[in-house]
Structure formats: structure tokens, C-alpha cells
Length: 183
Image 1: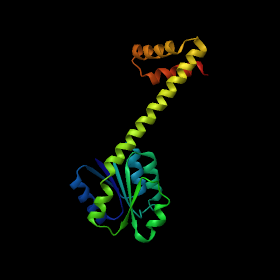
Image 2: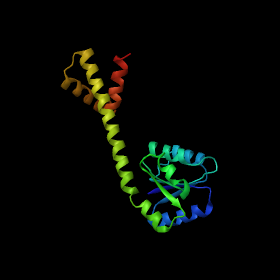
Image 3: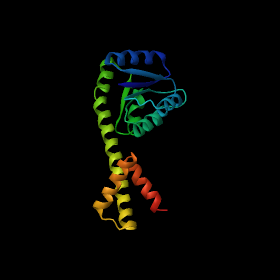
Image 4: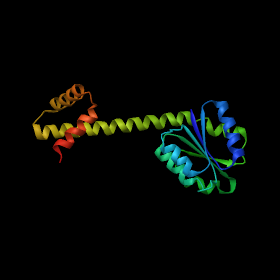
């Protein structure tokens, strides 16, 4: 499990790092929202993102929302008690808010379900990718039926055979067909 800790407070980073090392996994730290965005967009796909607010360049609310919406990571936002209720209403449902000060037990409870949440988010992303690929292939089949008078089984076989013979994916073959006939 890869975790990303974003905080400007060195003591909090140390506490969270020590806790996460007990659970096992690789821990990456960032000291600002911009640095965290660079890490995430640079190819590091964390399973868990912990944002200790406020950050030096932003509060952290936008970062939490962006991370929850664009990655499969579980997101924990740590904030003061007096603002936690207002913040909770502005966040996606899969962002967990932990109130400062917190105990080891509070933090452990917040982290316990994240491997399952991450797994479900990854499966959901995979399913959406497969559905999009099927739609693309079906559009290519319809194009072959329209322009070359193929039947559906002939169009299916044509795409399969082209993919096999050219060592490309069915998606790549479908995209090529659509580019050729739908200009």
C-alpha cells in the first residue's frame, strides 16, 4: 500500500508516518498542495492520501476533492473540530474527515476500511473502461455494417481477425475503422 501524506507540520508527518509504517507500505510525503499534485500527476498512484489542513498554499479542501474524483485513492482530511462539520458538507462522500486533535485509535478507525474502498474504486474504474471499449467496438461494427454491408457477426469477426493479425487491441482496430469511415 502506498500512502501520500500532505502536511506542513513536521510533527504530524512523523506521527502519521510512524503509524502507517506499522500497517506496512510505502509512504511519500509532500509539504504543499502543489507538491502533492505534482506527485499524483507524476505517476505515483497512492492507495491512501492523508491531508493535514491547512496547507501553506491552500487549505486542502480542493486537493481532497480533486484526489477523490481523479484517483482510486482513499482520502482522509484532517482539520480542526470547529470547522469539520462545515467542511464535511463540501466534500465527496468517499473523503473521511478526522478531527484534530486525534488519538491513535481515531486514526486507526479512519484507515481500516480504505483497502476495501480502494479496491472497489479500482474495479469500478476497470468496469467503466471496459464498457467504453465495448461501446467503441460496437460503433465500429455499426460503421462496417453501414459502409461495407457486413452482418453483425461478420463485423465482429473482421475486428477480431484484424486485431489478431496486426497484433493490436480490438480497441485500436475499432478506432482505426472509425477514423477511416467517419470523416
